[in-house]
Image (cartoon, rainbow, N blue to C red; front, side, top):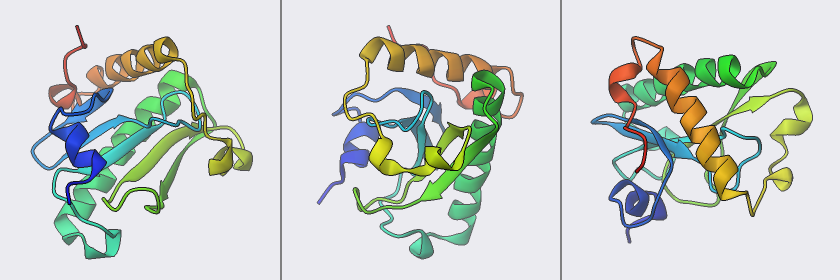
Length: 145
């Protein structure tokens, strides 16, 4: 069965994309822990991170680092958080988000009904910051119309 992430990647369900390349995409989490909370997702449906091809996993990690640096610069956080959890969707994804304290790692604090305009603004800010990075610029999708 196709995962919800594949449906987002295929454009069946809208997503706020901040990265796209031949191996993966990154889009804002629907229930963010903080503004800018991003999921790095392989295009291939891989269930568990331990099942991912090592080169794919290395690529996902590299993209997460690039996004984390952009989040730290744009949202002025203490450090970007990174978690691979995977219980809610059986499709490998890396959570990357701005953090200021250990409390920011509590998924029970995720915003289940975020403001759409605030989400759009966070995505635009992150895309803009990523465009300033020579390694990232070519992979940042155009602003939505």
